[in-house]
Structure formats: C-alpha cells, structure tokens
Image 1 (cartoon, rainbow, N blue to C red):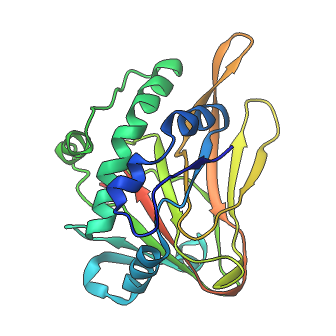
Image 2 (image 1 turned 30 degrees about the vertical axis):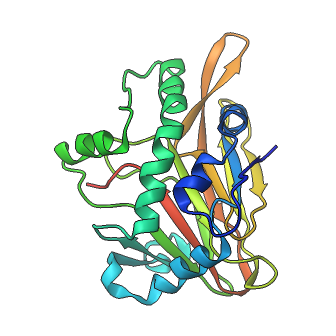
Length: 245
C-alpha cells in the first residue's frame, strides 16, 4: 500500500502535502515502519533542487562518504535560511507526522512528547545547542552507495524522517535502491527494498519503532541505506526534522 497524492502537476508543495491520503499513510507507517508518498514533488521541482547541488552558497558543509567509511558518494547539508521548497517540506510534513511520533514514544515507554509545530520543536533543539540544520542533498555516481545508518545528531531526535528521490530510475540512473533494515530482538534482521520514482517520498523510522507483540509493544531498530548505483547519477533530498549539535 502506498499513499498517493491527488495534486495535479505543477501544484505547490503545500497543496501536494494536503493531497496525501494521510490516514492510509500513517496506518502503513505504523504497521511497517515506512510508507511511500507517490508524487510528492513534481519533476520540475525535483530537477531544480538537484541542480542546486552545484550552488555552494546553499550549504553549510559537504561530506565525502569514503573519508568517513559511510560508503561512496557525497552529500551537502543546507544552511539557514533553507531554500523555500526544503523549508515548506520540513514545516509542512512535521504536523502530519507528530501524532504518530508521540504515539510511538508512549508505546515504547519514552517520556518525550513533541510539540504540534515544527517551529516549536526546533526551538527545543536550539535551546539544547542543536542549532545546525540537517536537511541534505545527496549525490551518487556509478559505483556509489550508502552504508546502513541512522541520522542521529544529538539528544533531541524526531523519530521519523523523509527521503525524496529527485532523479528518475532507468533514465537518470540504474541500481541505487533505497534499503531499510529492521533488527528485531533475538531475531535476524529483516531487509526491505523500497521502490521509488522521481518525486516519490519515503517516510521511515529514524531509530526505533514499536511493534505489537503477544505481551504488548516491543522495540525494533531501523537502519537505512542505498544500494550500489550501477550507472548514471542519483540525487536525493533528505528531510530530517531535528537539528544537529
């Protein structure tokens, strides 16, 4: 099951977020730890964001993955103020996810609860010294990949994040599938490949999520990565809701 938008091509980002079947999306996200929002961005917006990778003034830092053992490829963290589409996605998606985030924490026995607006959550992050923006643009070429990992940047972590594929599979690149793994207690890990097209967004758990068992909820640990790109170039926009220390 995937949540589709009913927004026509070219409609603004806020309207495309509003057009998502959020009840279906949250149901799948709760059950599986991820959900795909089909066509969250149109092709023109995807191409514009990807083309901005060359604009150094948009970013606060650049990471070459091989230098840190993260994989092959590179990414850049946006600086404040964020580009308008990135800001609209970050502030517009958060209120749709916050109720599930709070429910997950309650089921996992965690005391933290998240405020209704992203601005209020960012204020909490900034008060704790987490002031560096975390939305990022990733670029992969042939042979590049991203090792399984979690995007944890400080004490305050929002438990959900979003990745949006900006390139078109089989046209701009081949390979490069988005991969999720789930580590269950005393069991082997479960892997899932998430099929995405240009403009599709995958919403997934940052770290842990609750799963209902025979004795109540238990926690599973999630990681994500990207398989090897076989040819071409792949760009992805990452929307992380907490800032970094």
